[in-house]
Length: 202
Image 1 (cartoon, rainbow, N blue to C red):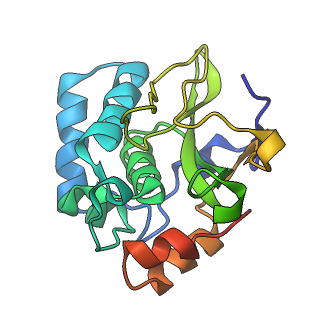
Image 2 (cartoon, rainbow, N blue to C red):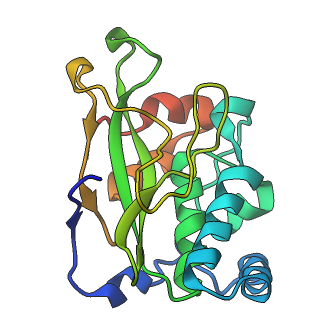
């Protein structure tokens, strides 16, 4: 497991709303939260169910070539579409609504499999559970070659990071999504443009 760098020592900072991106006082998100609370009783089981909703119910827009950009948790849940950043925003909103601390993590990855294709940030989350501490999960969505799981003992993330190719696994756990990430999402016309507009590093 990576030694994570926690931005704030106050767990309550990782429970904040960050309207409108990380927000759960909305009808759609409240409905999902109540469904989880009704079906699961422990923080672990609730966190796992929220992760699986973000990973499996939300299609990855780069996989489906869905053009519209979901940014907020509400937009992501309504459209059932979003890239990694949107999925991490949704997961954070669901968990914080249930008083489970969660932050934002990033990796620098190759965009299209070769160094020549350039680099872009990939977004994921870190969750805090009292019995295990902080651990990372990646709600990107599984496909051939990608097997991301909710695992507290051994990280099972979407992408193996290859330092020899210039990729970076940042250990930071941020309270808020990076402003550069949010700006790239709002300033892009569609997901095809966003694919190239994503920040290259934190």
